[in-house]
Image (cartoon, rainbow, N blue to C red; front, top):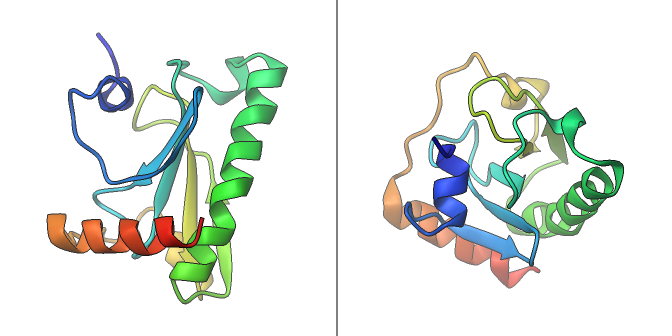
Length: 130
C-alpha cells in the first residue's frame, strides 16, 4: 500500500505545494509544529532515509537546501531547524521547521491546526520567496 506521501505525489491527496522538481516535492505539514513547517520528500517511496542510494540522498538534501531560505525569508524566525524522524510515515522525509526557540522543534508538543485557508496563505508567502 502506498504511503500518504506517495499518494500526495500521485495527486490522490492534495497538498500545499512549496516546490517541486522531477524527483522531489516540498509541501506544508498540515499539522505543523509551527507556522511554515515544510516536509521535503523524494518522489520515489523509500521507507528509511539511509536506504536511499547516495546520490539520491545528496539530491534530497540539496533540494531541501534550496527551499529553506525561502521559508526563513517568508516566516519570521531565527533559524530553520531540520529533523529526520522517519517513524510516523514510511516514506523518507525531512522536516524544515522555522524556529525562534528550541521548543519550536519539539515533536511531543501539541500540533497546530491552521486550516486550509491559512495553509494556502503560508504556502503562497513561501513560494513568493523562491
